[in-house]
Amino acid sequence: MKLLLGDDHVMFLEALREGLVRRGHEVVGSYDQLDHLVDAVAVERPDLCVLDVNFSGRSVLEAATTIRGRDPGIALVLLAGCAPPDVWRAFERGLVDGIVNKLCDISVLDRSLRRVRRGEKVVERFLRPAPTSIAPDRTLLTEREQAVVQLLAEGASNAEIAAELQVSEQSARTLTRAVLRKLGVTSRNKAARLAVDRSDDLEHVGLRAWR
Image (tube, rainbow, N blue to C red; front, side, top):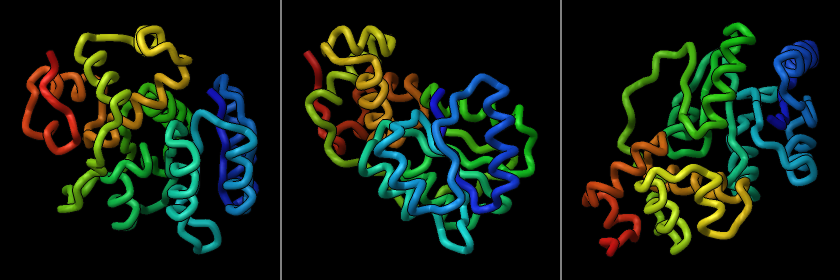
């Protein structure tokens, strides 16, 4: 997995890099300045960014919004000593895919990153608060995203989705992530269940009854 790391504590950043490399990850960049990290995303095209919640007191959520806007297929995991309400709201909206406590062992972080890469939403070593009234991003699904949901309902893998839509497997993963975020679900199975049930939720995201 190609990782891009960001933390303003240089010693922690180097230890994090070394620990993740030992576990088989390819760290394509590590940055202690937030602006440099955001610029590097377009160049390095990582699979996943691991970001400290605060850079010298500056919230990372603005940078997360920029990264997500440039490439919605890049997964985002936040490391935090504590998770303030705006971080949980970002998690609920689908802006970030995981929140992991910085006090966890490197093996716990490794497992969390792999779970996120598989499309899961992960909270590790935090007691997650009750969801707020803020709804997930339920913008209309594109025609291609609707096709992805139907394929998920049929149990298709990323490789099978890619073959059916005649796109790369990476593009299939990107489309699947976008679908999960727009539907406000945390797994492929949940998206598939929505498709099979044809629930009212789907009417709000532009899905029609399939023939």
